[in-house]
Image (cartoon, rainbow, N blue to C red; front, top):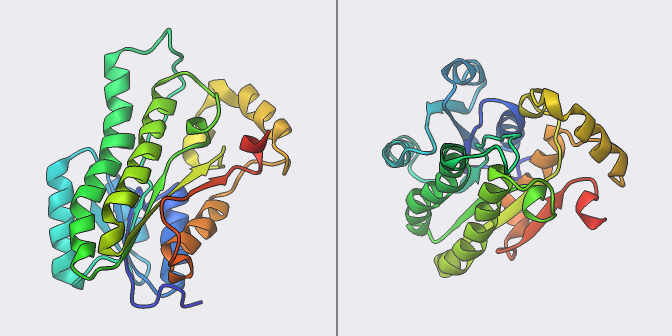
Length: 244
């Protein structure tokens, strides 16, 4: 307990799924948490918890990012942690996708992470300290799905490496995590992929799908001062699937 005492953390997509699990864990570890999300109903619910503040954010909107950072700095005086967690998925195969599909996933998964870094990193640089963790995907590391989703998560991987080199001298650490298939509302809705999920589960060395807390606990380490000398790193949280 207390690994994030007096820290101010922004978690995008922080009102449900992995994001909500992180918000609760970070709060329990002493952080003031801004759960930034586009879902107002979910924001209202998570804001009922002490030290979790729900704020509306469309990660694909540069204006929303600018307003969010100004609001957080005004209310809390600083930003110590950014978790770029918000994302969308798609089951469309390469023969089904078109430009609109590509644009939709890219602007949320890729552009959203880029804008978070663009506006939060300068705020962190004021204190010469900060930790940014970007959620990519196992699909950016192995050949799993030639589609817009894997492409958008591949961009998150590249963004993370570049940001780590650019902002290291400002005391800002940037790392990326690569979750496998995690039991969240998003994956439960992938009805046509149930057979594929079962096959992945069977191939996973640890023999099960991941849970939100599996991801949240790993990100807590990277966000905390325990990882003070870690930047530009890539951490797979996939039960060993990418090791096959």
